[in-house]
Image (cartoon, rainbow, N blue to C red; front, side, top):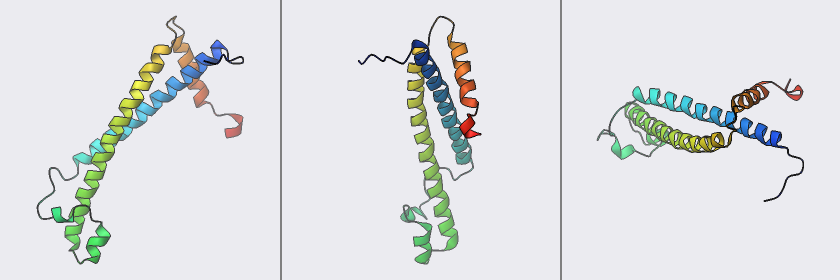
Length: 136
């Protein structure tokens, strides 16, 4: 491993704290999406695709309409297609959140145990929340 000559222990701790705060925000962002997708799915069609529309699974509304399929049937197909897309998004968010939680746990394990971690994290949060001159 290369020895760094300009990065101090304080710099490393600040970087660790910043990474920890950012990872917490990432985890919360996934949770917001998980909550939204879960709520959306509750109001969408439940169960398997009805036999009356399974032959249209995987086809776009445009294709179906151009083939003369009844608009009400196309609407039902679209509802199930969208439901399946949201279910996939929900699964993806849960998977990505689990990865982020693993990284977060590794970061937290590296924080100092001498009681200084809360102050380091608070400073990192303040620094992240305070706009720089360039951003003003």
